[in-house]
Amino acid sequence: MNSPQFAVTFLLLISICPLLCGCQEAEGHLEEQHVEHHAEHPTHKIVVTRPVAKDVISTQQYVCQIHSRRHIEIRALDEGYLEAIKVQEGQAVKQDELLFTLMPVLYQAKLDSEIAEAKLAKIKVDNTRRLVNDKVVSKQELALAEAELAKVEAKVELAQAERDFADIKAPFDGIVDRQHSQQGSLIEEGEILTTLSDNDVMWAYFNVPEARYLDYKTRMEQDADELQVELMLANGVTFPEPGEIGAIEADFNNETGNIAFRADFPNPDGLLRHGQTGTVLIHRKLHDAIVIPQRATYEILAKQYVYVIDEDDIVRQREIEVSKELEDIYVIKQGLNENDRIIFEGIRQVRDGDKVEFEFRDPTEILDNLKNHAE
Image 1 (tube, rainbow, N blue to C red):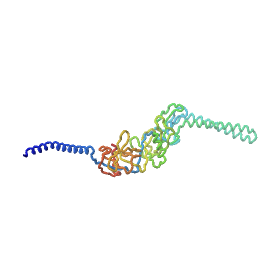
Image 2 (cartoon, rainbow, N blue to C red; image 1 turned 90 degrees about the vertical axis):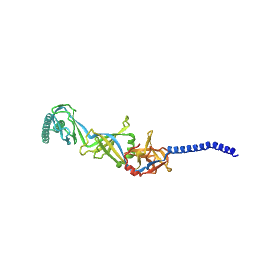
Image 3 (cartoon, rainbow, N blue to C red; image 1 turned 30 degrees about the horizontal axis):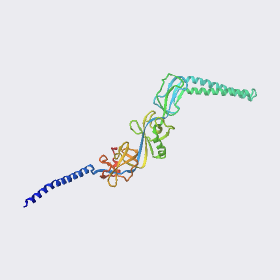
Image 4 (tube, one colour; image 1 turned 45 degrees about the vertical axis):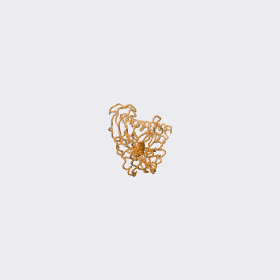
């Protein structure tokens, strides 16, 4: 009696089993998808900080050529034999110190002759004046004698000038350079004998792009007290004397788009010499600048970006504009403020839209320990 009922029950169980198995497989598949979804969008633990406003020093560097304040060629004013050389190459000399003599005997003889003629003309004037007073000769004779005296005195001045040509003296304090002729050489008029450099103050010339020139004229020049000008020598050592911007040339170079600046440096110890090279450093203090570590930035197609954490702890990519690049930090022109939270460590581990867990670090502590640039 129970056999038909048992058979029906058995058939129903057999038909339901595949359905139950299918449901279990579907449920397992959904769980796998859920796990995979979390694997694709994991929760990251990263280091976050904030931009900070602080005073920083911005430094601009320019390769420069160093020149003496006065650097002139000493030339012969007349021809003749170089009779004596009174100084050594590289010697420091004082103004009016004798450097060379050029056949002085000939010029001295001519001067002595003209002086004698002047004395004779003076005696003639004195005698004629007495005769005029005694009414022996007319006043016209006295006028002629005085004219002759004036003529001879002019010749004395000319002879004295020619004599001075023979004694070549230093026009100012300076350092004598290489000597181009030896004693006894025949010197032509205008021939160079040496050069003389006044190294008390040195001029460093450097080229500035137009944009930085405009920045200097519109902002930096007004805050001249905030500028510090230094000179780095070729060996990497900073010259001990501070400088100042002394001049800006009148015209831009049409080929390079640059304009020449001149920085003036005192040179009391004579370390700097004409023709040296170096690097001018212009330091400017920026007040309350918004700064971030370079390490917190990344670059895409020549644009700078940071990852900002929003109020829901979601990563958001944001473009920033950098106004100054300093050592290890960027000064931000726009794109960030002091209240933003930015990723400092782990920017390669996240993507825009990720939800993150993070550790916050004080920005002052981070800036004090920076040694790495942007990733």
